[in-house]
Image (cartoon, rainbow over all chains, first blue to last red; front, side):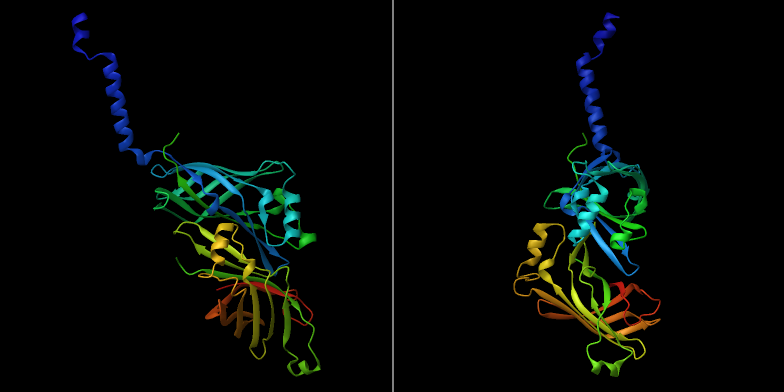
Length: 204
Length: 164
């Protein structure tokens, strides 16, 4: 017993060796680990289109969007959340902005949140993102479909940036929105989610 | 950077017939752009990732056409100071003299006199877009075009969304 123990390295040395081995393995398989990307508010907006009177198409935008996405592109998994300040709605028409704000959120309400836990991939790019849109006043399922997606190395940030355009359709009644009589807006709302997100240094 | 895609969305309000002289072209319909519902938008892909969208407007203008003779004319006046991308820093940069030069050229114009019609409605407008005093040819194609009546008639609204 005593002789056997003497032939093995001290416990501390073994733990150190094991730790080194894990660290080396982790760095070699880093591509498979989930990576956190932080949305850049300057390149992330939720745009929407809504038919007006059967004639023109209203286009509006939520200007204050933030969030975080965790992507494991090698294993085709991802999740995340996007927060949308409903009071940042901007259509170019102040009276309509006021009506939308009043219909969608109360003073002091937290931002609406698109939370998604299910992602389908085509190759290493997300193609369908499923989740829900939740605010103080409503919760509705939401399915975002990729129109475009790409990642690149941004030389100024010296980080990888991923981003794209994802579309979803939303029925106004599902979020308690009725502006038909007052503004002639009717039919499904097309959401066009523009996101760009910067890779964070290390996964926490 | 790829070329920007443009979209014009507008409601056309029926304009009063100007004078008795207009009777010669009785089949011609005249409209004024509804200032509340008429905007020009643009889209530019950013670093091959997301699509940046911006807006000018409301835009002023008028349109007249006669589907029978295939004639038409549209004139839009775009106030470049109304540029809004949702990003003030970018707006400020785009307004500078080497880009849109908003101070020197507060208006951009689109004038088209070549119309193609389908089922009585204009669906393709070819003309010239003038930005910073420099003209480029531009064709806008309707993605949606409709009137309050199935066919455009005097006194009824029309509207649509066109891309170029």
